[in-house]
Length: 588
Ligand code: PEP
Ligand code: MG
Image 1 (spheres, rainbow, N blue to C red):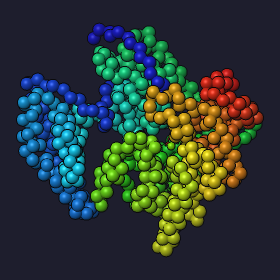
Image 2 (image 1 turned 60 degrees about the vertical axis):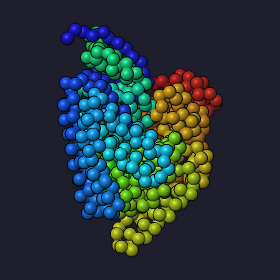
Image 3 (image 1 turned 90 degrees about the vertical axis):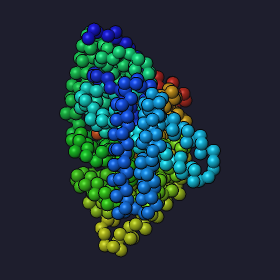
Image 4 (image 1 turned 90 degrees about the horizontal axis):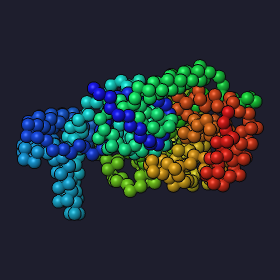
């Protein structure tokens, strides 16, 4: 093949490192299905594709139905039965095939129109029956569309090696399935610096650039791609000279990371001997060995919602108990902070109604502003049975290690009190049943909403520990969406307001003699770490992969220098001034 022209695109740097590989356009779950016109010759092939998808969808439903017959109430069995009948209806069988023949549109296109037709016909009618029918048709269509996706066989976890994934947007459940040995880089149109997908990409060490025109990339003849995640550059069809330059850069990065890693068993301490404890943020329970190898003092934040982001149902109490118990044992005495499900916001999942027919997310509906909506502890308090199952599992597992409970997105002291009451009730119940738990299980609050930062003195008095989540705190304090590339220039992790709030939280925690840990992405940024130490943070939690870099940075500073740096920083009132001050003062 002739050498295609080198093209350089600039985007938003999200995850550092160099990725070199073959481009793959990945159709995400939420992306619109491709709607194309087919030729007459392709009709039969399209019909076969449709029949296969319909068949797979029927099998899904039959499986679900037989599971529900054993466990679920009759209502859910009935709904599944209706969906199965719909799939046998001539509207879905010969009707769709006829439409393919007549309109020469692909199946995705036909289903999009069908859904629209139904919505227009019935949505204006307020009758609950008709609303339900629209839901049914959407549900059935989505299931079929899911089996139609052209890249369906190509799951994120099964990419060919050296893949450069090009997609509109990454969602956390897909990103978490990607393997760093197969995926060389991500390039997306949407996505912000501290979106959950970005956090996962960094934790896995997969370079990532967002805010790139994917539609433009689709028009180019792509042979190979280089992604420079540190500079936010995507190079399409690199010349030999460019390729050589980046291969060397990549080698250099790998070597310096290896060197840092070889020192990760050392303590996180400043030159003058102040210890800063480094814990790990964890999404996948299987990675406990890695965090121990990388020198973590324990798990500072287990994002427990990842247990079900890529499945269709909440894990049961027993499933959770087994997982938490295994984790606690594997940590051999090191603490395990389990954050209760932080679901909602950018982590909405496509859950099926549970055995009692409760459609958790369906009942919340499409929120105009999900980050300010029914997320995290708000969601769990709305469905206390889910919270109770999780807390029971945690309490039962607490007999096997040092487990702490962390509540996400606390915006009022009342939420902490409600959780404590529920814990006390469960503990009493377990005791009555002679089920062992730890005598004391510390309960902490995430400080990631302005109200909790402002009220940190009251929270510090009643909580056993505080955990500052800067990813959300920055988003909510500065009103800058963490997932939106167009607000990335407003999302200042070191905004003066953030530094003041961190100082306040540390002061309140110290006054109440409660530990405070910082677990947002800023904890892994070598240019911010010294200032955080200077503000009094003595515990960080970062992705296991970042621990060597964090320790290396801490070991280059004296506590007095860090305090002076923080004092100087607090004198700056504008974000830009502060940025310039830090750039000049933190280089080592
Ligand atoms: C945070 O908000 O800083 C945090 C650690 O939680 P998450 O990134 O999971 O929202
Ligand atoms: Mg958060």
